[in-house]
Length: 534
Image 1 (cartoon, helix red, strand yellow):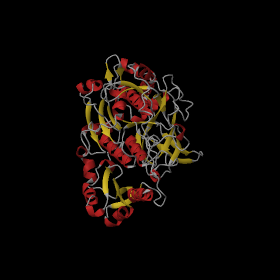
Image 2: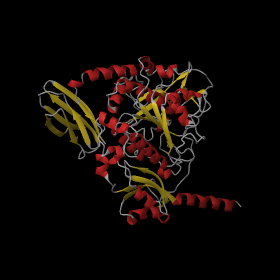
Image 3: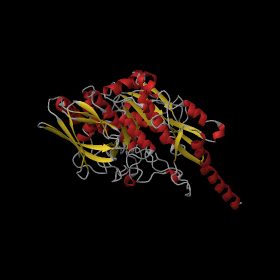
Image 4: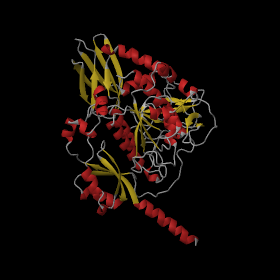
């Protein structure tokens, strides 16, 4: 009997892992130029306005994937199942046998390449089971306290006193489940004000994002931004507007969740979202051959990290939790060069030991900043105020605070807002791998932003930074010629040119990925930037 049982287990494991996960990339899109020339056909007016305000180009990545191609891949004879799609990467996420997936390249001329989630298909596969939310689902105490400490810690209360409460800022929450958000009292104010905009469950392909009841992680996360209970609980952005997107499949742990996340980020961009908060992270999968190595977490490699960086390039400010893995390090997309990764501290501002630490594998400082995540106050799906641990809660506390800050500085870009937040933090000059630049003071960030905006006429500016291809350069309006010099980390001059226009674009596509130093010299005025080439 034992031998038969063992044989069944082995056969079951073989059957499970005979199915492979992969990204299938297409080599073209249709009607690209016509779509770009008529952007309202592919984007909402809110998205177009946000891009125009911050000088974000509408490009081929905004054009949807060719649905005819997807339909052809879904045909029964291909042997594969399509789970998700990405217009930014012009790709779909599929599952099927290795043979069937590889056959797509030869069978369809529009298929450019296949990228398997398993980098080494010949290695043995070991299934592991882990509850990524375990530390956060443990109630510290059943208390009806209030959020004063976690709001005061980052001085979001000072912004609220000036009536900066996130009004006009749109936040997309990408998470695991939002049960009862549409009915419970903590979000009554949100609903009454018309700020609960819409939602979608990308895992189950269901427009009712509230129908999945098995995980209230998203409900708790949302509460730290949008929750309001008179005299008991106030989120950091109670008057922002929210889209809720369910991208985490809590029943399993596979890379398809990264694909769902990118789909949701793409939809967020098309809807004109300003901020994405994602209290999710990916590093270890059930099939360990899919798991990310330390080297993969270098800010630009994993699928979700690359998607987060594109969202940043599109002008969205992506706020993500650093993770709950302590010294094991940050996961994806917290490693992304373009996101703001949030560590956790306790009520006294001390590093919380579960908070994921950065490392030398990340080319930029990770985590970026910190907020309260140890015994943070949240509201669960029973409308009860409880204390939970997790960077999942330091992230929305910070994201909501940033929404209130951005309301006060509506003309700032996402990169500028991130800079103001970092510059205001408690250890800006001495960052570490525990809490990054430290705990921000959002009132100070506002003061910094206002001060720099007053000097905007005399300012130099470059964006996006990190840059992939095209770098936008703005220099002071004057009659002086400005000399731009770019140096690599060894001090070697990579580029030198004279600029006479107040703004221009620089093609950096031929530059190797890495860190560079840019200097501008115009008469007596000068400015130095650290530039990251993705």
